[in-house]
Image (cartoon, rainbow, N blue to C red):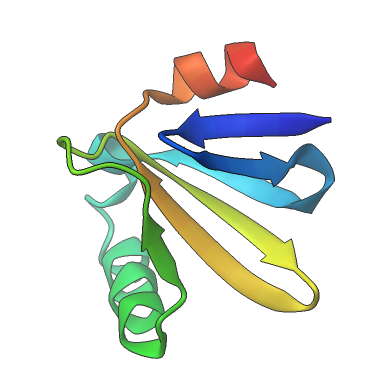
Length: 80
């Protein structure tokens, strides 16, 4: 199965490690550090130019990818 993250971005559901709400998870310093490190490594991909609401962590061909999306976690879970 596939999950449509917005715009033209679609990923395989088997590659998803987690779907996280940005408002709730970025309160913790560890999550902020994780996202900052991923940004520096070039692992993040912005799906939309709208205000981001969630991020999806996936592994594709052994490479970690983090998708920042404007869709809420509930919307993504319904699409899954």
